[in-house]
Length: 117
Image (cartoon, rainbow, N blue to C red; front, top):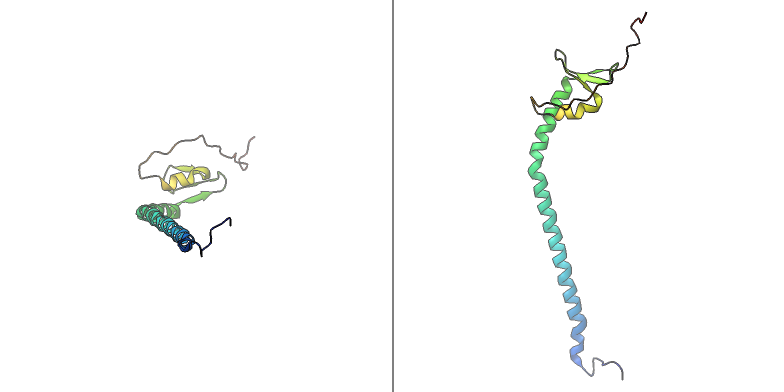
């Protein structure tokens, strides 16, 4: 006989049981660690959430005050000497009060209504 059977050695019945229990323990530990890691990442993300909401509300309030200039493809605030190209609008909306924004050369469209004679 090549392989021992359960009749010859009754303790062999425990081999599949031990393998099953060990696999279940490893699987349960993996699930537990995954849930723990996910909860920790969620908590860290929620810690920044109130700050992001505050910044978004301030940007939305600023956005509601802007006017769009179709001719020059940018936005401006009435009674302010600031013109912001559309490409820089997000940076302008989320800039802190008094913060200097990076200046890029403006490419303004030529006014076709002017008389060039």
